[in-house]
Structure formats: C-alpha cells, structure tokens
Length: 245
Length: 245
DNA sequence: TTTGGCCATTTTGCATTCATTTTTTGTCAT
DNA sequence: ATGACAAAAAATGAATGCAAAATGGCCAAA
Image (cartoon, rainbow over all chains, first blue to last red; front, side):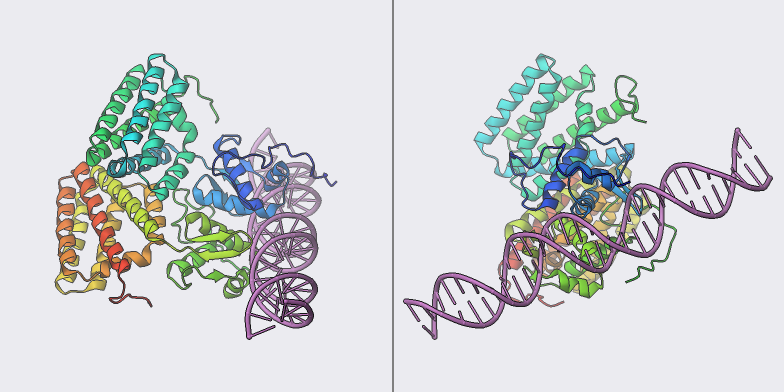
C-alpha cells in the first residue's frame, strides 16, 4: 500500500523570515540549517535511528538534498552515518564531552589572547555592562538569565578576537555540546557559582589590562572548571535529568 | 559501475574522528577522501571552476556521490559552492591565511598545554629524538628534511594531548593551508630559521618540565612567528615561488 | 521455550532522469 | 565592427528509479 506523501502540509516552519545570517538559496542549504537546528535542539533522542524517509516527509522534500545535508552534519560531528544502516544522532560519551570542553577551552583561550590585541574600549565597556547584568542575575539566583548573559559575554570575547574562522569553529563546537553546556551551568552548586563569578571578575580585569597571555590562562582554567562541573553533573543525574537510556 | 568493495569486516568506523579517517566503506566516502587529497595537493588551480562532469569522469562515478562529497568539502572550507554556478577551489585571501594561522596557533597552544598533563617520558624522548634529527637537517641546510621532521614534532605534540577531537580539528585546518605552510618554511631567511630552532629548544624545555601554561605561550608565539614569515613570503613572491610541486 | 535459518519488506546507496538556471552562440540592428 | 537580443547548449539542483543490503517475521528443530 502506497502511503501518500503529504506534500502539502509541512509541519515544520518553511523558510519564512530569517533573523541573522541564516539564509541559503538552495534547498539543500535550507534543509541543512533546519536539520541542524532540529538535531541541536534535541528533537531526536540520542542514538536513535533516523530513517531518511521520515525526515523527507517531515521537511517535504526528496531524499537527495536531505542526504547531502546528512553528509555535512556527519562531517560536523553532530550525527554519525553507519554504512547501509542510516544516520544516528551522535551519542557523546563522557570522554567525548571532556574532549569537546577542552577544545572549547582552547578556542576561548585563543579568543581571549587575540581579543587583547584588538579590543576597543567601547567593546570592553559593553562586556563590563554584560558582566554587571550577569552579576544581577547571580544575586537574584536567576539561572536562566545568568546563562544567557554568560553566553553573551563569551561570545563577545570571541567576537572581539576579530577572527571569523575562529568564530565559525567556535560555533560548530558549541553546537555539539549545547544541551550539556546548558545543564552544566544549571549545576546548582552554589559554591561553583560564586567561583565562576570570581573567575569572570578576573577575566574582566585581564581584559582591561589587555594581558593576553594571562587572560588566555584564566579563560582556559575557567572552562576547565566548567567542564568539571558539567561532567560531575552528568555523572550523577539522579537529581532531575532525564534518564534517556 | 560495480562497487566491488572488499568486505573488510569493518562494521563501524570509530566515532572519535570524522575527518581524519583514512578509509571509508561507501563510495561517497571514498570519493571524499580522494577529492580532498586532489584539492589539497593543489591539482586544481585556485579559484578555477570545476565542472561536476569532469570530476565524475575523472573518478568514474555518477554525480550523486560526487555532489555529496562536494558539500562536505565546502563545509570544511576547502572549496566554495556558488549557487547554480558550481564549485570553486577556495581562494584564500591574506586575511584568511592570517586567521587560519592564528587558529592553528591556538590549537597547537592547546595541544601543548594538554600534552603537559599526560605526556610520558618515552614520548618526550621520542620528540627529543626528532628534535635532534631536525637539528641535523638544519645544520645541513636540508629544507625538505627539516620541514618533514618539524611537522612530525608538531604532530607528536598534538598526539600527546590525547584528544581525538583536537587532533581531527587540527588536521582539518592543517589541510587548508598545507601548501602555504610548506612554502612558509621555505622562506630562506636564515635568521628566521635559527630563530625557529631556538624556539623549538624552548618548546622542548618547557615540555620536559611539563610547564603547560608556559609551553602554551611559547607555542603560540612560535606559530605567530611562522605566520609572519609565511605572510611575508607570500606578499613578495617575486623571489622564487615554489609554484609547481 | 529457545535458537537458527529462510523469506518478505523496508531502507540505503547510487545511477538516471527531469526541470531550471546559467552560459554560450548566432543573428540582427546600429 | 560592435553591441544587444534571442535561441541553443550545457551545467546545476532536485526527484525518481533500481539493485543491494539490512531489518523483521515466520517456522522448524533442539
């Protein structure tokens, strides 16, 4: 029996308006963006098989552009392609996470070093602004606000490095660990939280003095501590994390 | 066109790396490796249009797997895909090169830091061995040998970092600037060469003492100097550009 | 009840085909 | 002769078709 392919009702938002730099003329590019988001946002359970046909119906396209997008996502490390057995959302082992966090640490460390070479007073002022905003969230115990502002600070440092290649690579790696990164900040160890605030003070201080090498060290250590918190949080997820296995 | 791929019994490629795997079961994977090599080795002039048909004939396959490989190479940054106008070998501007060198510097810097955490005495001894070998090439003014050994030293440091994710990323970026990197070492400024040797002494020294932060700084500066030499060499290539390899 | 093999169905991988878009070419007018 | 315009040719983007492999079900035998 031939199941009629629903070519009319596309359940997922079509191109529509795009905010930012996300726009692709071709269909495969469009699919790539949407599929990447779909995966990063965690709509597919870890390690689950994802039949092409299902994704095709979901996006209302044929298999060719979808398969092209899958190949790219596999190259990015978001999914893995098993020969003749389809695509799976890549299951990140604890070791994978440790490695990813370290690479992120290296990239942010680099970003800090480069930022000190070129950052303007205005940019520093903007980051200071974010810092105080984040401090406010900290005082109010506003986890979500803290997380958001924290992200923006780190992104500001990366932007201040004035290196598009670095920025792109940073974005790629960040995408791979987005969910974990979020929960890492949610580790409700108040002590770690206060520690992170102090580290951010040191970051700001080094940035003001344009002390590249020093900032590099501080950022690396900061990310290393975040990594420890994340791993710790994942190792004992009895708290409230979804079992997922 | 029968695939006739010998069943090596390799069911699943290790999920650790994605770009560095040296063998693929599927045709598109095979093509990806061959095409990447083809591009990296410079068989296609910079910025030249590359008709799909031509590549298809070259590899003896149809367009589908080839196009999949092209998408991946574009995602890696080796080529660029112009909408409805085909693939071009990506032309690297001077700014692109500067950025790439800086990212490489950041990754090696990270590698050095991580290596200090886990490197064994045997590994250090091996690197020392390479170092003296390289010194021999330096004394004999053997550029090619020097380049090769130099590469192996840096790769050994990356390997000692024990981070497959880092290793893969490093390999990707290294591929993008392979030719330039080579010619960078060919800059026949004797002064720079001697300087590089001294820097390598310092690298080895810091590595012996497992001084991670210090090694991180040295490696970054070392790559920065290499970057300067490369850019300088490219800016005035009237000298003797090693165009044809 | 469990285990192993056989066959139907589904899914993947690649080739081929179809529809646009781009590029080239040929003709005509200035 | 040169430039503009139109049609032909070619290339790209996407869809479809087909063979091989994998998945799952079924039944027989231990």
